[in-house]
Length: 316
View 1 (tube, one colour):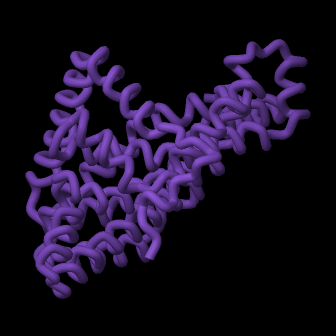
View 2 (cartoon, rainbow, N blue to C red):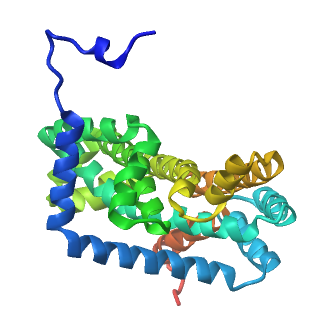
């Protein structure tokens, strides 16, 4: 058996990387203590408020609402499947915990996307920014997920805020990567045509590049939500509540039944969120078709008026 002192090398000195990072983190925490407290209280207020709003309607009523959303963004088959998914969560008595997890995932994913999409656009526009952002995203994504719970716990103590912070860090990189990739894949000739017509860089970004890149960006949104949901389970170790806490309790008690109930409930939420975000990105749902018809209606009216003028028939 090798002892710890025997593994120390006399040739290569030990670099105190962890200690220096810890010192830098403590300096950051002491310097921005008031800002950290404000962010923590704000995030806690939003997440708690969202969880309370989701808990207002009865479980069956909220199931119908979620099924209606699925029907609007996809089709009736997903709506019917949503009813089955939610009924499973209700029958295993994990509904309230699932709502807490849903609130945590929603807040963490929303904050992650607010940060990720502008960073992705910046990385797509600037090669220097891309070279700086890419290794940071690699670090955030490849670091073991449980490690991010340590700074989250140090800054925000036990609670949902710490879980949201750790989830945010872990789920953010795909949003940046997919946004950068989507902007870079837009046809250069289309962008050049926009410049030729005198469009400003902002107009090209918002009217040309982002609309054409929307499908790929939505794939990134899907990945952010899925990673946030997976990290939400680990957030149970810092008292974030929800299904993660139930999984942690099942591990501590070696309660296999509770572990499967909570774990399968996470799976049901994941299936629902994945299919809904995929439906939004695909643009094939009832809501997307209605929006397309509304946009095309004025064009059809103008064409009809022109046809009537050409044929000499009166117009109304």
